Image (tube, rainbow, N blue to C red; front, side, top):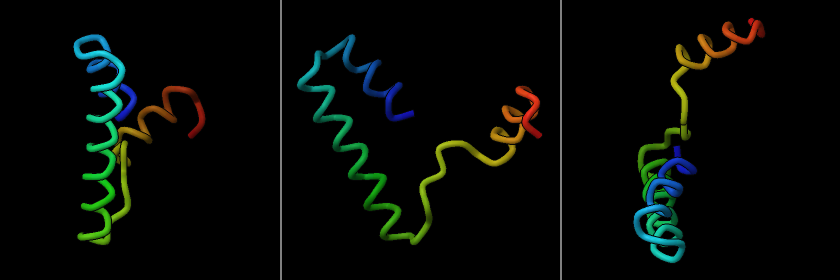
Length: 58
């Protein structure tokens, strides 16, 4: 998700602004993780299981 965010911004705003915006987003995620005590989960478990089943890994 972070990579997609960066790539989407890169096309519109250029490299420098994309790097700053992506860094800020990562800091926000980190701050939320520290504040709530939850770990980062980029893919919900059910979506992960679907993807694993799709590739025959489950």
